[in-house]
Amino acid sequence: MEPLYIGISIAALISIVVLLCILREKWKQLRKPSNLAMLGMTLVVLGIIFGNGDRLIGYSFIGVGDWY
Image 1 (cartoon, rainbow, N blue to C red):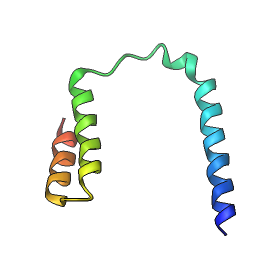
Image 2: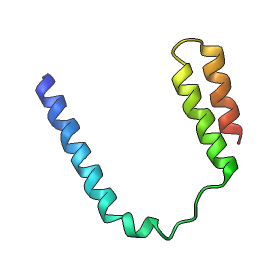
Image 3: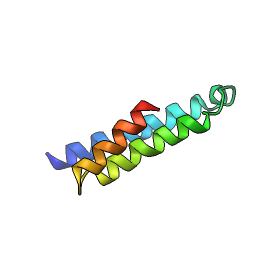
Image 4: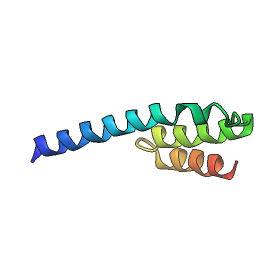
């Protein structure tokens, strides 16, 4: 069963890379995210990273990041 999951993961990775290469030109036209949006995304990622150790800190980061 494990080789099946590895094959599915590799197929999904290849399809994502192909999709990213196709849509690359379209993304150049999009605006860059604001500093506030970057701060929110950073706080959510920090919440995911620190969520394993202390849930209070992790969920606090996620909550504040989602608020932005």
